[in-house]
Structures are given as C-alpha cells and as structure tokens.
Length: 122
Image (cartoon, rainbow, N blue to C red):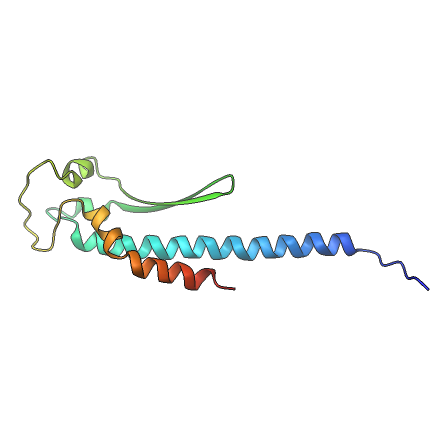
C-alpha cells in the first residue's frame, strides 16, 4: 500500500531557505563582531588631535554574490596620510601608532578568530 504525500518539495525548499537565512544572519553577526573588535583597538591606536579622524571611523558590510565583505573605514581626507608609515609624525597621544588600523586588527587576530568560530557554530 502506498500513500502519496503532497508538499515534500515545498517543505525542502522552505527548510533550505530557513537554513540559508540562519547561516546568513550568523555570518553577518560574525563579521560585525570582527569589525567591532578590530575597529575598537584601532581606535585606541588612532592619533587624536581634533578628534576628526577617530570620529570618522565607519564600519561597512557588503554582499558580492556569495562573498560577504566587511570593512572599517576612516572617512577623514587625511586618514591615509596619517596611517602611512613613510610619513614621519609626532603624535600627542601616547598610545597612538602608525598603521593604527592594520595593527588594531593584527593584534586582535586571535580574539577575532575565536569570536567568529563561536558565532558560526551550529
């Protein structure tokens, strides 16, 4: 005796969409955590004179097909000049460093990896 079941294909599609939605949300949360962690340490290393540079920090998340990309950006016009290690400068802030954005993420690498791993666990 066989029974015809209706709606199996639709149930599978709905389940796949649900799983994709959950994984997509987790990926966005993981990237956001990484950006916050790296950006916060970069803010500690950012030189402060008039606070324009540190207040211009922006986080951006973009979807390019299947790729999720996160960026921390300093929108101030002179951010590249201050970040460049080839331009000698003296900073008023004792904790300020050249390449503040790069060093902020490099020094947080282990914590960022752990946070992303924790977020992406099922």
